Length: 577
Ligand code: PEP
Ligand code: MG
Image (cartoon, rainbow, N blue to C red; front, top):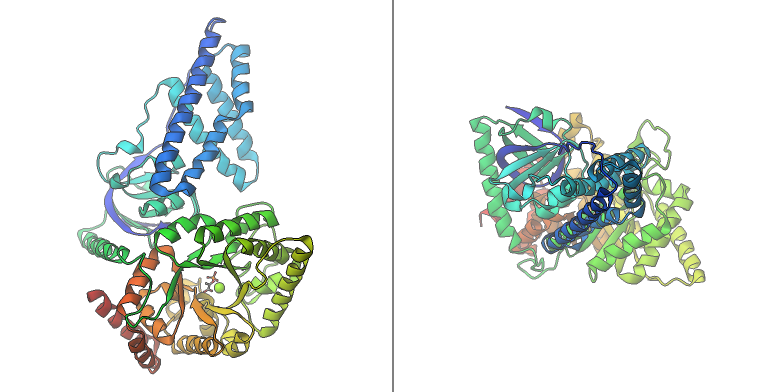
């Protein structure tokens, strides 16, 4: 038994044997053809192109029905490759000049293209290599008459283990036969991750050497939530995970029944449950899980994996898309939260001794209005198309909030002059993630339209615990009385000025804290999409008035351990109902 750790890409637990899929090898020999054979070879090529086109459109239609139009759009790039005149003409020209079989010529041209693209230092173009490869393989199968052992005819439920999976590999799988997906490469926003999430198949990506360490038929436990793979587990471990899997299944079934119901407490109090997203693609899953809006759109991911900074138009298109998709629900766009643990290659931030205390988030944006304004203008423009709000990260004082707002006002003036429509009264919130903001939330509440508590940073800063350092992880306690007092303070300050207070840090998605946060008066929970049904379920079983008493009890305790224990017991009681 051994364990592999990768990047968690899609939640859930699966236990099944490994099914490795290797690279498809084409044995294409070079054959001379006669003058008369040329038209026949060209015809063969054209037929292969048409058949491939039909195949992809068919696949696209199926995916669109099963996983939504968004996911199916991945194949648009494949269809474009099929229409690439340069590629097609080069094949035909070389075929005539060199008088060689079309399969050979095509594979040579394909190699040349892939070679050119792989030399370009651009993440986007690198992604295109996968598309060219994928389509190229389909065409070669037609040209060589080779049958492909595709994933749609798997006989038993397996964990698919691959170096990488192409979108069409993933799409041709049937959920019933694929227990989980593991890949050596890929990040949390790779095609595999996106598709696995929409198929709700547990997945771990970025495992580096899963394909060399795992053998066909090895028994695997995949924990997609933790990013863990246990290879050939002993009986004891197996039993633990079997129980976990069963419990998870039972719970998921129960939760999904409530996902589209309004999140009302038993005494009729409305508490919104929204989704956190990092990319527009995640909207689909947010909606599927019953999100009543987006409470945190972390826009810094938009700046990653690219050479240049996104243009105003690109920002605008993304924000417009998200707000239109979620309308009439609200979408809260968080302005660029760079620095700390999030870096981009286009902007050089000097190495700092304490990056989390350094030039990050709103501090960065206030000193780089050139970059900040591009984003603000785009948010404003998109606000004409939906229910958009914006919020600033890392606010430490009312001065910073005012400075950011004065740049926003500048942008409004500019857009007015340029004749663009936008929502003049767009709601502007402050993230409360610094103790200084939490302790002056009464002052901030006078000027902010809403608050969103960012517990990930609030805990790190108030307890002086690096959120990413495993050596001090035991001190990272959401239930610490200092944290709870701050949360209480922020909610009360917000309510006394009549503004909504939400929470978008991970604490909002921890089931055991839901009763406590509800009792403290939280108006909005913004959580990873998959958590929404469960949070709604819990809210619907609780009485707000009773939870206020529960929160009082929790706040009277002296240690985080005691609070956690109390919250754990409460959760058990709710789930046992
Ligand atoms: C937070 O700090 O709680 C938060 C939601 O923001 P991030 O995790 O992106 O810093
Ligand atoms: Mg934060």
